Length: 262
Image (tube, rainbow, N blue to C red; front, side, top):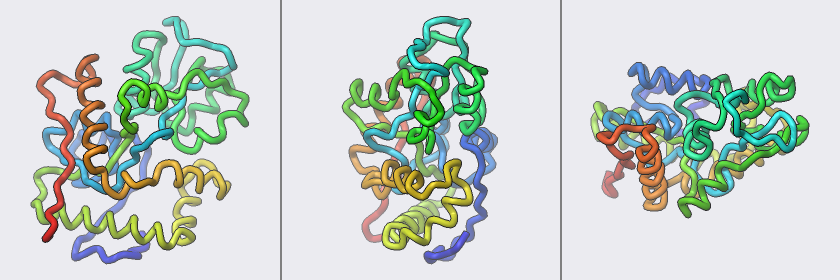
């Protein structure tokens, strides 16, 4: 990490890993702070809090349900759909809108489009940069799951966000939130400084694709979820509970309240 902003007396040990691996290790209690799928965060709501900054939430940001060839429709248990991890929000959306239509297997998100090209699966739920490049791979678009969410809820889609363990002191959580906000502010005013890190870890290395990705997923709600963000999280909670993806006794996600004088 570059330490381009003041860490305010904290020390961060950062790991960058596949989203489902991250979710699994969160369930194992390994991280104090993490960027989590909001599906995973729903299941951890009793022991974590959502930070106001650092989320991916918006309109037009949803995962795409792709087919190995144009015109295929998910409607048979003999068909196979690949999802990017059991506890990803993309998989939750597939369960909300296409539950029981096909068999489902979970693989690393970056393997999905190539598997569809090889006809190893019939459908795949595509996330991240693949949203901009799927047509180049000759695949079909079954549905934009984010658009389906927006039409059903009238809310932006909450994909993932920064969560912190409730066992941490409130003052520590507030400091973590401040560092994340500082980092976002720095990145916004020094965009060229972010490219080396993005190029190192992105699946697509074209700078135009990278910036489209940033412009789509980094917005006003990334800086502060606010009331709209809390409403979107409440919608995710109620709909997941209605179909049994979280228990009736589960707690709803809460956004950490930053004290103005902190």
